[in-house]
Image (cartoon, rainbow, N blue to C red; front, side, top):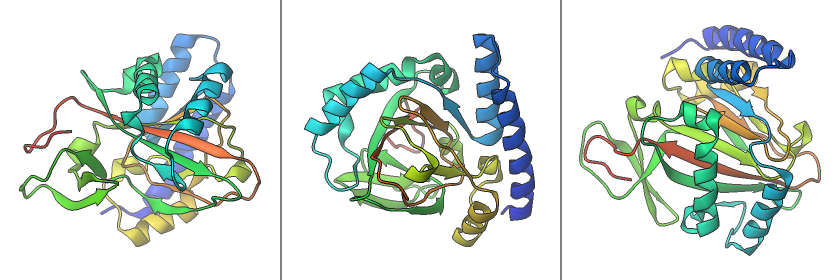
Length: 253
């Protein structure tokens, strides 16, 4: 188990260094892509600007309006043709494609909506569960659960490290709109107990606001949280998860 103080100091230094590099507005797309790749590796997250255009965001917004998204979110959107097509587009983006394993596939899309009417928070945590086709009896597998009719399991770190989450922002997300808070570099320290995660989030968490069409790339083991919105804007996010084509231990997507 890791030392929270070590996470706090190294994470803060890395985040500030990455922000300085991004703030210089490097002129070469190749260099920009390299910096993003390095930030994803060291910090566990990186923000891709304008992955979707305004027109594409409008189209996604219309599709969400016609979809069955009950409550604050839904995990079933990949069954919708428009969402499956969008997943392919996201995967094809150079910065996303570079961070994926060979022969990657989309394994999940979760829709999150936050507004004055649907306001909520999520404490600091890691994404340890993955959706699978069914239960398998293996000592490396634990934490079985069911959500919206789908089976989930807490996979070993060797599996989670191959996954990439891409949070596509359908709306502008300011610091007042409850953006994601992450602890830079925390994905390198294994799994956290809840009390350690909460402490790291309070002492080293940083907010990641985003503009409409931006996408936040994130490794599942990085600590992250979401605070309540203090404004009145609508904040909608499509949280895609991409992973390897095949799974170990007899598991299947």
